[in-house]
Amino acid sequence: MNEIDHELVGRLLRGERRAFDEFFNEYYPKLYRFVKRRMPADSAGCEDVAQATLCRALESLHGYRGEAALMTWLCTICRRELSARWRENQGWAGAPALAEDDPEIRAALESLLASEQGDPLLVTSREQVRESILTALDYLPAPYAEILECKYLRDMSITEIARQMGRSPKATESLLTRARDAFREAFALLPGGAAGALTP
Amino acid sequence: MTHPDPETSIERLIKLAGERDMPTREGMDRARLAAHESWSRMLLEGARAPRHSRMQTMLGLAIAAGLAALAMFSWTRLSAPQVPQVVARIAALSGGASLRDDRGEIIARAALPIHSGTTLATSEGRVALTFGDSLALRIDGRTRLRFDSRDQVTLLEGALYVDSGGVNTVPALRIETPAGVVRHVGTQFQVQVTGNMTRVRVREGRVLLERASGVPTDIAAGDELRVAGEDLRWQHGLPSFGAEWEWSAAIAPALEIENRPLAEFLTWMAREHGWQVQYTDETLQHRTLEIRLHGSLDQLDGAAMLERVSLVTGVPLSTRGGVLWVGGGGR
Image 1 (cartoon, rainbow over the protein chains, first blue to last red):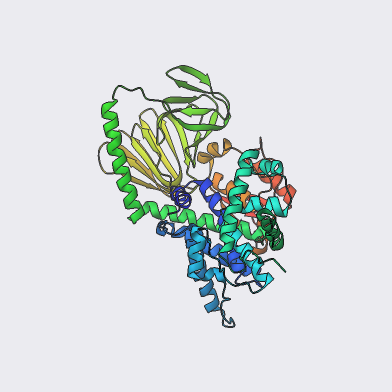
Image 2 (tube, rainbow over the protein chains, first blue to last red):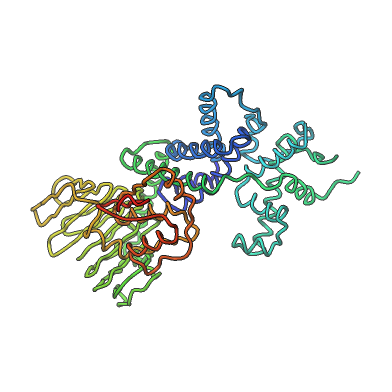
């Protein structure tokens, strides 16, 4: 059971406004990207599906048992929303098959268990590697993804990140270490997550 | 063969992926409003029809175990002194007010915490409070309110307004009055005590009055009940706006508008004053999600806020008959 998710849901059920903000800010963008990977040409439609998913999830929050990670539970609801939308759309040819839809990969991402297997899933293209990186980031807790992007994408110093995140430099260093470990574990589970994936 | 430094590998990966896609700000705002509505509905329905999921059953067992432990603790520590807890905080005040407890009396001021066992007294002034995680309380002039615990206050005299923000809170606030205990379910209402007469008027949702004798009395939106001893007098179909409610809006802490959409300001204004929002056309309604406000509305009354916002956004705003017209329909 994911204690952090369980606690957040408990606070939502008690009607805490702050919990609603935390829930929305963390999961709406993630759900949007989850849908975008499946409907890349329709940004407005992606927003609609992500919104419908959040509404449905909040209305049935009593049904969350805490057995799966909250993100996994939301993705299950989101897949149903996507299926309903696709059924309505006569011209649709079928859902794109994504690695993260594989139940085994999903289960592995959920627990973020370190995989030491020597034979990672096949890498087919550079785009697939990029896809896997983005997926791995979205499965991490929001502060992990944020600190990795601040550090490596925006080239911010530890002092600057600490100020932005409202933490001490030491706590920020520690968070970065944990974020790197978690990212490495999550990424290794996905196609393209092989150690030499970026080697030309 | 040499292996790259793990940190360098992660840096290369993150750079390769680039910035993640984000929904538009308009989409975010729209989704936030819709999600908030769903959340409020779930809380209200949950309060009306309690479910018995496994999680709740476990919670119930945990609470029962906790109560048993608490009973044992209380039994063994009957003589231990009660430690006052912070139960509320002053959000805004106008005019004079004081806080009195066992240690004496102090002048009330903004941001001051209020501990259990404290009595707040207003003279000509009014006070706005935050109570617990999500309740807003407003206290009218010439009122005395005692804070008993994290879920109970006693209205000794005067008028109290409660706004739960449209959601049910756990535990629900209990208000002790001469007529009995007033409890609410996700609502806006006010309670007034004058001598031996208690008046409860409900703007939204519903309220239960538990009297010492008889079954709880259900008071719905638009209803007013006056209780004096065994005498009960009802009024029905009362408006959600008007002079009876304006004192609570007058002491409401100003909304922090910086970078907030106009739609949020309109929703807040309507809730504070009990108005309905009407848009003259759908395009304008969508625009209110896009228009961002800047600056501050501190020190302005309701009419001045509407005038200021209308002026800077160019969107005509007016009120008539309990309706906040957006787009000039009220003229």
